[in-house]
Length: 48
Image (cartoon, rainbow, N blue to C red; front, side, top):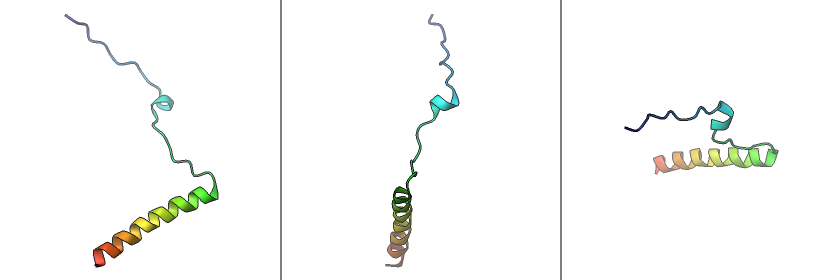
C-alpha cells in the first residue's frame, strides 16, 4: 500500500497570491476611475 504523504507546510508569506500595486497617484486614479465607471454603467444599465 502507498503511504499517505502530507503536503509540505508553506508559510503565509509564500502562500500569498498577489496584490494590486497602487503606489503612484496616476495608477490609483485610473483604478478608482475604473471602479466608478463600472458603478455608473451598472446604474445606467438598470435604468434603461
